[in-house]
Image (cartoon, rainbow, N blue to C red; front, side):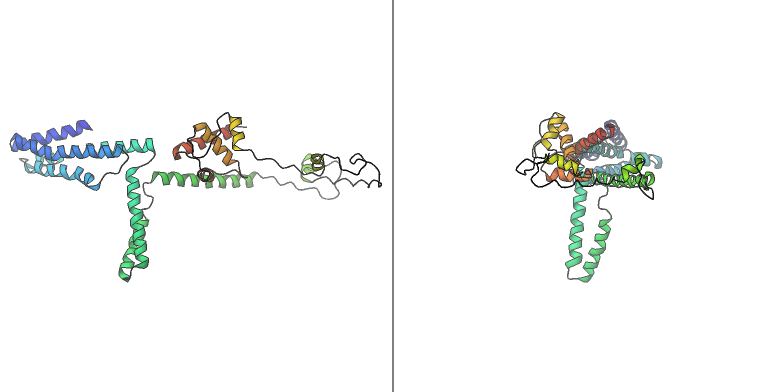
Length: 334
């Protein structure tokens, strides 16, 4: 890119020098390619800092070489060379735009945010809010109608080139597709077991026995008053183990929920705390605990919402990477 810009500047200098003196050619190159190089460095620096560039900088990248192009075209001796002289200064514009575009993509890849797209989105949303307010409250009916039409035109551009919004929408769509596929496969491979008609016999097969519960045994006759049974002492005090009674009646004792401390201890990492910087392993522990804190397990969007509501901190890219590691562990676990 630097070589292309330098070649364009040297070509412009040579073309203008043939028609004028060297001082005029050097001034033309400084005003055209030189000023364009300065604007290119400004654009590159702002992009690397994660800031949006002003509109005057972007306009100057093309206006200054265009002026040099017109000057070169005027100094051409004939028609064919007029086209060549006019195209030569545009090499600097292409080089500047190429460097800025590459730097912008590097920043987006490293930081996960696009300053130019965010600036455009902010300006678009601000204009949309203004026109919606004017369309609803302006006293002039014609102004209200124009703002209403303008707001609908602006609404078509909301979310354009927004990589973050696109990634979130893809996550929502993937979740819906996975849910639909799960329902479809469940309906396709579901097996309905019909209990046999007539009297239930003792030689029921294993499938029917699992579906049709066995009849409860007849209650034992009550013991005579004053008698001491195996379950009561002489003072008529219950001595049974409550858990044994629950198991006899087919009732399962309540299960204590697993805490975040217990998950961290089993995993072998320090207990994560809200508002503290978390390691990648701690992020996976927190997401696993939040995912299985409900039945059915939470989706990615629900888990991230619970993650933020609980006060935990972590970048969107790190949280998404930790969620992918958690899903990989679930898929690899039999």
